[in-house]
Length: 265
Image (cartoon, rainbow, N blue to C red; front, side, top):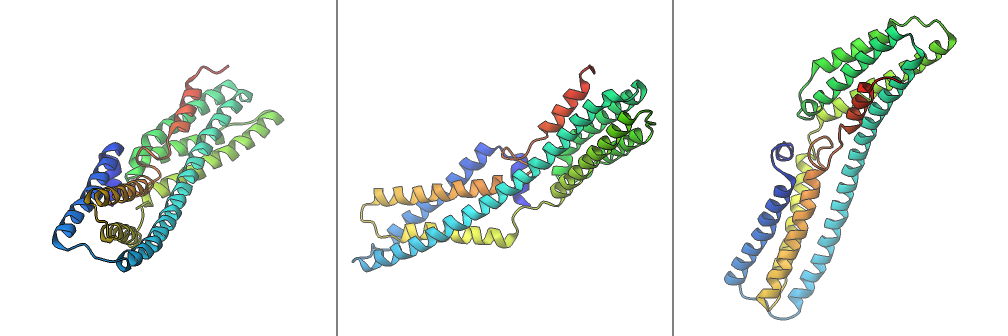
């Protein structure tokens, strides 16, 4: 998808600037051609009709864009919750290692650290739609490390069961994260068609509105074009929850690595 390529290779500020120049600048150029090619309509009937159409189109544009941005923001928050669950479960597992024998604790800590590092390395690869088998292998080794524990006390049995529960949380959160990242293609073509159609209609109404003074008309069209460009920028930036500046971050996984790398108390 083009939106994925843009988020990976183009800085956010350049995307916003490019959209403003393309949309607002293009709208002003179209207005220059229209004002030069066609005479300004006389009377109030034309403006009354355009005013009604502008109100309807503006309402539909605002409602549709707001709904779309809200839905995408919800997907971003859901992805962020998954990553926080993955990181917090790893930190809790590291804290619980104090009840196990030193040999078991050291072995599990090393396996958990290797998995978290593999998960961080996997992040950009999965976001690009590719697989990273080393993360699967590291998770398998982590399960094996826990399965080799032979609890000697009731406390160790309790903490071992809680650790397996947290390990399942990590596995489920990672699976959801990876699947979402690999299968995410952003808004479908039909949705982009609606976005461009409503945006074009809104700018078209601003261009068709009868304004006698050119400076005022250019300012109106440029303002509407900049508004449309800003909304398009939000849609592009929120299209993929694991790519771009406005995206979820692997920081909870890095926090788990930092915690595991610290000397145990």
